[in-house]
Amino acid sequence: MKKIYFAGSIRGGRVDADLYRRMIEYIQRTDIVLTEHIGHPELNVLEKGKEDEEIYNQDTTWLLESDLLIGECTCPSLGVGYELAYAEAHGKPCHIFYDRNKTQLSAMLRGNPYFTVYPYEKEEDIYPVIDRILNRK
Image (cartoon, one colour):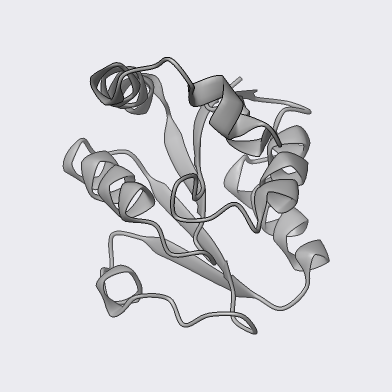
């Protein structure tokens, strides 16, 4: 069972929160998602009372504990960009999804051969790729 760090926009915008939830639930069929709260519709409420430093410390601990990172990057986010760079610096495999109909992914991500990037057009296209990433039969 793998430990997955799921990255998705929080403060940068929550327009894809339902998608994050569905992706996280799909991953959780066989693996552990350390950041399952990313898909929670009331995430801003969950963050209330937490200091930024506390969130940073928890997230970097989870990144170090994870086996790999799966990010949904359609909604641009400084935090997700940082998480990707942090994961890369610590040798964690990084898999990036984005909806090519809604955005152009940053050249800093697409141009970095370390990242495996999966543009998609329909949500249904995501799940077979997740199966391959997680070595599901």
